[in-house]
Picture: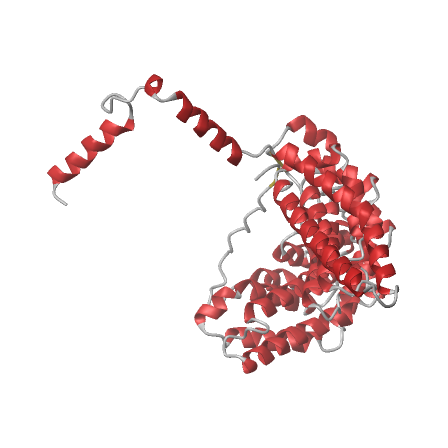
Amino acid sequence: MSLPQWKGLWDWSIKYADSTGSGFRPEDVDPDKMKWLDEALKQYMVDLSARMRDIKTALQRDTTTTTTAAAAAAAAAAGGPGRGDDQQLGSETAAADLEEREALLDELMDIVSSIDYARDLHKIGGLPVLLELLASPHPSLQWRAAEVVATCVANNPPVQQWFLEGGVLPQLLQLAGPSERHPTVRTKALLALSGLVRHFGPGLQALRDAGGLSLLVGCLGDTDRRVGRKAMTLLTYLLSQRRADCAAAVAGGALPLLVAELRSSAAAAAEGADADGDADAVSSQEASDMRQAALGTLLQLASHPGTWAAVRDAPGLRPRLAELQAAHLALPADDREAQAEELGLLRQLATLLAAAAPPPAAAAARPDDQDHVSVEAFEAAGRGTTFEVNEPRPAAAVAADAGAGAGDQGGAAAAAGRGEGEGAGEQPPAPAAAPLLLGAP
């Protein structure tokens, strides 16, 4: 396009960017048309606070009538001849009611993704309704209610405190436990537990007091990989905050399950690739993510002097680490880059376990990380404020701390993260973890 044409487009844009050249005057608009436009716009403008209250009322009504409807359906089923039509009608009504409640919970989850509406849900009495739904006989309602809880409590200290005091923890623990047969319910319950305790000291302590550590260890070997991965992630966080729990985790049988995960994830990926060239069943990246979760937990255990020897002597672990490192180096360049984080974890753990001595006792004596944002600090600082909190330390920091003062570990730990062919020059310091931003996205 030539310059004159660009000039013409510019002049046209400026002309219609304001009302100076268009001759438009608001007072010339037909009042009836303005009224119609105003009403049309109002139909698309939803008061989310009012809508949330309506959803809460509908769910509350449904939870109180579900038992009656179920009893009526059961009576119709047991009524003998002549009750077939009633039974069919009752089943259709129950299915429609269930579908409606699922849709309401999906809508509620979208609303409470805003931190302010998450607080408002509690203020209008939404927690008792969620507790009733967590105890529903329908898994589709249970996991949706758990997901709403997870959304409300995430990075929201006041809601974390309210929900903890309101009694959500025992129900989440029950849904996450082995007695629950529906894997999605367990996955969402673990997600909610994670949101309840992260950056909230009282929640973390309550989880420990309620036996959360043993529950998480028991989930490590679950047949559903989503459950296992979320359990490993939450367990890694728990161990990073309470180092004395490392010994309890090992005593509870965590090591064999973690080592087995390093084997099974690779085997599952290979089976998926054999069945389908695209590895639809279990993708290579999914298998890598599972191994990374297991390696993160193993690094926490290996960095503690009291459990370092147990990790080092775990049957089959060190040969498996060597196999995985060799497999990574044999990958095509693109795949190797995509899974570089896993390779770094493998090298760090292998270096830590190859040391001549366990980490120094000073590492265990170091105070636990207080990854806690108080409700008072959160309220005083306001929404969208940045707080410095202690996330689980990067694996490189774990290995470096564990190796300090252990004779021959210093150079090995420094070289653990280097790629093939890199020199022995001084490595730049690892970037500090970004602070947590609490508040609405």
